[in-house]
Amino acid sequence: MTGPTLIQESGRVGLLTPPAPQIIIEAGTAASFAWDEFFSATIRNPHTRAAYRRAVLRFLNWMGPFDLPLARITPAHVGRFLDEYPGSVPSRKLALAALRAFFDLMAVRQAIFLNPAASVRGERYQVVEGKTPEISKQQLRELFASFDLTRPVGLRDRAIMATLVYTAARDGAVAALRLGDLQWDGTQYHLRFSEKGGKSRLIPVRHDLQSYLVEYLASFDWKASPKDSPLFRSVAGRTGALTSKPIRNVDICRMMKRRLRDAGLPLHLSPHSCRVATVTNLLEENVPLEDVQFLAGHADPRTTRLYDRRQRKVTRNTVEKISL
Figure 1: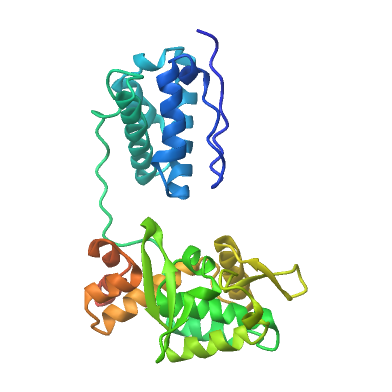
Figure 2 (figure 1 turned 90 degrees about the vertical axis):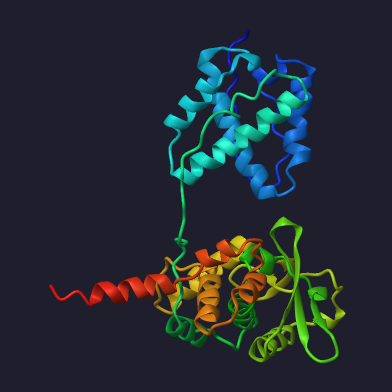
């Protein structure tokens, strides 16, 4: 067997299938076929595909010094790899999930006899509350008051932030909105979001968000634009002029950080902080959990509860009463 070939562990979303490493090539045609199938056909979500790709390539690089064929990888190797894996428990659990799925397909395609990751036990990890910080009502008021509404970019940023707050949508779903996703049913506007897992949600537009969107759209000739053109457009450098290109979710994050800095607000807040604030606020207002779950686009109500910060407030209130 020739010496191991190190592989770049790039996780950029949208890359083509990485070239098969030597250990896969030497395992035969079935292994090469399964490699291409796994990274090109079985995982449709690009972010999941990128995360699994990083984990699999990292493991195969780690296996290089052992100079073993693919079929001789054992559960002990996978276990030792996870023991040495840097990062948090969720990171190790994700790596194990990636290896299980990868080697399962290798076994199905008969490139190996048994899945070496199948019997490896993962660490127990239970999350009762998410880590994303909540943005407060006062912070939101200060943020919205800081926008320069004399420029199109200010109108755009206010509309984006209001969409994040009043729909509880993820920044990626907001960035993906097209003009055709803003729909009028004869009585009110709706926004159609394309969410994780291929889910599509139609969310009513409340009155203040509607006015923000209308004022933003009036800043450019949106009626002459095709329905599949971006709802939220990018900006040409420092000019502040809107382009015809779509904004990306990373641009939304950078925009919010910039706006937070300008408003003198904490920079640890993020677009996801708006989602946390909205979920918590609705639960405080006694909106049924299933309604909040639908708005947030969660398949499981337990996920929605992770966004609920009411327990944190109760806990803080409890410890503040200690009179020692």
